[in-house]
Image (cartoon, rainbow, N blue to C red; front, side, top):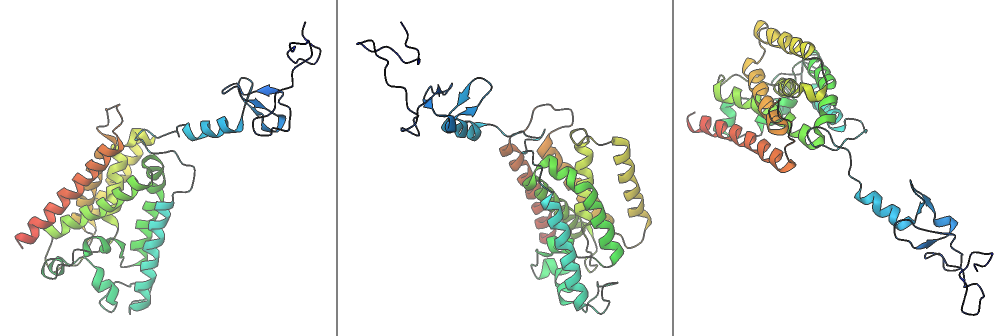
Length: 298
């Protein structure tokens, strides 16, 4: 016969001592964890889909739960697009620094009166003869007017956040830099030796190309995106003093980088992070070869 209090009958017919919580030995355990079957007191009971779990099993389950990922394998994050914001802030800070040094001030800071501007602009002759290859990247953070930086940062603010959410921070940052490097490499390899060029347009066009390659994964309207890109290319070839080579080079580099991350548009299989990293490294290596060949034949 089972005793009224629910304990098991002892050999003498008296109820056995009630189970004690494994975390609080001085407290009675009313239930057991449905995972490990350890006795737990009311304080340690964690509601589960079936019964209750102990705190240790709940903590272990949280550590093994897989985070949701995007179609390219990046972790889904709800935080603000910090890389996009950081790039915009960096460009604005550089613009302010240049403007304070320049005779043209904030309206037209791009002149020789700013030592930083003269040092960072992409001048193919200086890159080759002085070995100043850093100009291939630093020139992407320079702008010659408020309209110049305003249009580039507006484009980055529009196209950057959705791409960053899809790609994740490191992929997006790498793609931006590869677009900038692609534009600079095209200018260095095929541009005029003594003509200096600056601007983030190469990186922006790289993001345009990436958006076109990944348009299905981004969920954007293809017609709208193609229209925006077409307008930008029309402006590129119709307005004087716009870097055509920089835009084309950035567009090609960004498109190839997007393929390295997402694969072909019709491919359904997700590329591994290792494969993606190797693909991006391959794009960087090709751009480095272009720069090296141009240096050797300068």
